[in-house]
Length: 236
Image (cartoon, rainbow, N blue to C red; front, side):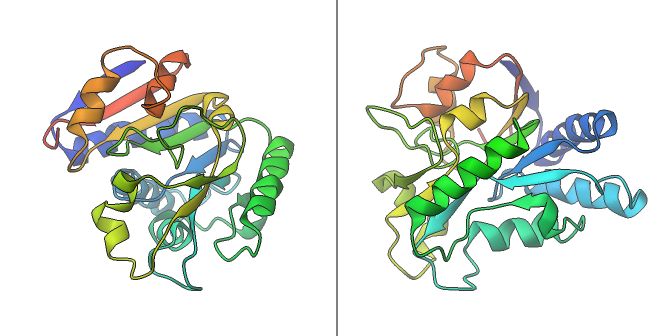
């Protein structure tokens, strides 16, 4: 695990973009795992700028979505789907045939997780996995628990996750999310973990203890050989 401290959000985002653009240049058809939320938003903006300057740069890249809420009304502005579409996928013109995602309107979320798991096995290991850090130490929606799930699964959301500012604005009660499991994340060839935003300091300090604990899912990234932790020092 390599910690890279950046003075602000912009420089953190640029560092992430440098890694992504280098890897795509080497392997244009790589599998990119896209995360929603504010932490990678700067990266996605820079990827859009790259696309505008070099329109064919991402025209072979494959994308898988990291997670999705369960129980949102159709077309909700708060879905992970809408977030990643608006911030990245539409901006760099990723078509449906190169995109694997949880359906936020799936009638059977458990069955939907099995579908995504099977499709991901067909696609192969993720090449670049984008992650943010949850206030409680979760990655994707792998929440603190006595046991962590290997495969894609329906996750019961913790009170701390449910109490985050974004979820409080949703307007409907949420209890669950669909998420990639720990195996897909740890099988990724490269992981970029963005640490920025309010309320992350305690989880970040625990991560630096080099102790692996299921109550701090992000700590399992210590087992991975190629993790870049990109830290916005202005926020932590």
